[in-house]
Each structure stands twice: as C-alpha cells, then as structure tokens.
Image 1 (spheres, rainbow, N blue to C red):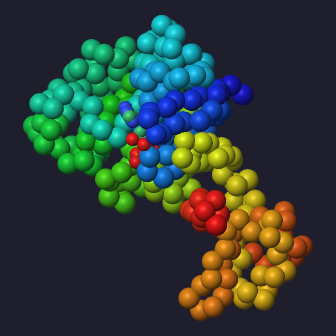
Image 2 (image 1 turned 90 degrees about the horizontal axis):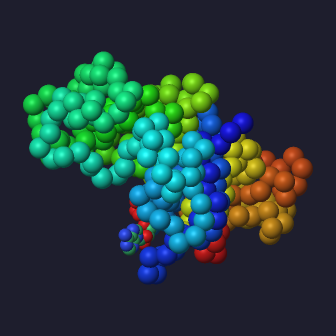
Length: 284
Ligand SMILES: Nc1ncnc2c1ncn2[C@@H]1O[C@H](COP(=O)(O)OP(=O)(O)OP(=O)(O)O)[C@@H](O)[C@H]1O
C-alpha cells in the first residue's frame, strides 16, 4: 500500500517552540486524526505538509510528491485543504467563490459545489466576511470536496460547527474515503469525533510525535482500572500509565493490558481517556 502522506525527520524551531524530528506515514485510503494540546505544533506540521512553511530539516511528501519540488504545485490540485483561518477574499459571496474556484481547479465540479452550498444552507448574497465561523468552515469544506481531491487536509475543520452539522460533515469525510485511493488528515480537539471517524491517531505533544497508531490497536492496548486502592496493589507500577483517587476514595487508572495480571477486570477506555492519561502520566 502506498502512503498518502510521508513526513521524515521533520524539525522546525520558532524561538521557544520546536517540532522535534517528526516521522509519520499515513497509508492511502485511511483517515488519520492529529491530536495534541494548544501549541503542540499541529498547524505547523500541516503548513509544512502543504509546502507553506519550510522545515529546518527533514522531508515531507503528499500523494507521493515532495512538497518542496516544483511538481508539488500540480499535485496541490489533488489536495483539498481546510485551514483554521478563513481563506477567501472577504468581499466574495459563495457563488463568486465558486466562479473563482472554477477558474483555479482543472477538475472543478460546479454541480457538486452548488449541491454542498444548498445542503449547508449557505446564503447566496452574503459576503464571506459576514459569514459566521461555522458558515466559513462549511464554504471551505464545500470547495475542498468539489475539485476531485484525493487527499483532504483539515486543520480544526469542524471547530465552530454545531453537533448536528459536525456529524453530517464527519459522515462526508467518511464517504470520501470509501474510495481506497482517498485519504484524510484531520486535526481536532474534539477527540470523540476523531474516535468515531479515524483509522489512525497521531498524538503530538510539545512538538514531539508520541505515537501514530491504529485506533483499534490503541484502544486494545489500554484498559481503565476503576476499583479500590487495595485492588490496585495487584498492579505492577510499570502497568500504570496514570492514576488518581476518585471522590469516593477509590482509584481510577489507565493501565497497560499486557502488563496487568491475567483476568484482571479493566473497562474499555476512550481515546480521550488514553490521551489525557498519557499527558498526566508524563507529569506524575
Ligand atoms: N510564524 C510563527 N512564528 C513564531 N512562532 C510560531 C509561528 N507559528 C507557530 N508558532 C509557534 O509554534 C507553536 C505551535 O503552534 P501551532 O499553531 O502549530 O500549534 P497547534 O498545535 O496547531 O495549536 P492549536 O491547537 O492551539 O491550534 C506555538 O508556540 C506558536 O506560538
């Protein structure tokens, strides 16, 4: 299987912050969720991937093309991008944005774009600058889905959308990857959305990639211990990723299943449980 995205040993420093030696590969046909706290480096990594920012070292390729090569300009036609800031001229209306895009993309599909604008109930006469944040996101997503892209790169693309629209848009991304040559990289702080949608989860923490793993494997690797302190004594310290006492005097911990005693009662964690525990575990 080829990779839709390949980042090799990417480093980039901005004063106090640095992305540190990030290596990541996302197979074609899959959806990868990029998670991390505010300032972890997600947008920086996405800008490097889109060739908008040069890394200090390392290489990045999307759809098999090195993003620093001249050919990447052509390859960009095959990438639908939604960044966390508005990206259209402020005075344009949705139909005018459509006309600009028709002149920009060789494989622009006007009917698809019009259908998304109707589906998202975007007004026809309002200028982009007067759209709400959610409406701006919807218009950007409509464009990203209307030029026959093979890869979607989405930075906080569902932020600001109400839960019903968010669900609908996540389903659109899901439909997009039914074609095995289509892939998605999406960053979000809404971990429950990513848990529903993604095949892979990549976790960036303070500029370092702590892991990029298949979601199902990740969920199987850990369990939640929720019982008395006495019961917890049966756990080896190495098995405990992070542990806290509950308001009722019990203990709640994220535990590595492979290091827990055989037959030990553990609940299924969520991706949010795992990410929070890993961050807390680093501080403990
Ligand atoms: N052009 C720049 N000049 C200086 N510092 C920058 C620049 N761009 C990003 N940074 C710094 O890099 C760090 C990572 O920022 P980045 O936007 O990549 O984080 P993020 O994970 O996307 O955060 P958030 O979840 O808040 O959007 C921050 O400390 C930010 O201040």
